[in-house]
Length: 248
Image (cartoon, rainbow, N blue to C red; front, side, top):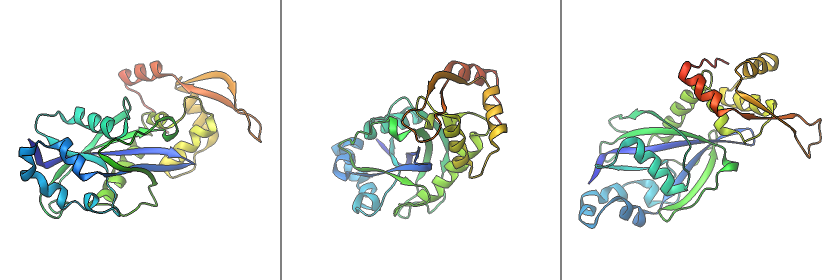
């Protein structure tokens, strides 16, 4: 059975060309119905599809998500719907909050539990599943027409991301496997929306012991080649367990 009044949605952030992007989708209505419902349930849930502007028009975009089947666990279903619709798996995914304003969905009351994910678009091959009509990255300051309270939720998720990167190095999930200190600092400046003192930033980062010197440098660059670093996952996990403080 589909819980008509409860949905799960995913805000997926990516970092590309020094911009924070968000991944939005348009679903294929008929196939999404089959994914969500049995034939017997369809009559009870058809208004989910008939009144959602993202399913009835090619002009509107929304988050990757669906109404929750009663037999599914929230966290596991968020991972499942991402994997089914995009092919993305084993990524940083964290629950943001529930949104339940009375009129956030015009035709009936819907509470949505929102998760946010962080990925590097260049290192994930998005797979367009049969239930996805379209998947596309948009800069968060240049969004298309979106449904319901998508813009408000993006801003809430971005605010949470900005708070979290100051205490936990979640920004590493947006970087390639090997990166320069300048690329790392640029990422944090874009997320936080402010310039950072280079000397202090690098000192704090290196004192954490989270970086591994790969003994490699950039190639095919016009300027002086910079050192390349990678992220020490084992050290990060250990510091998290001990109570990591990553204040930038």
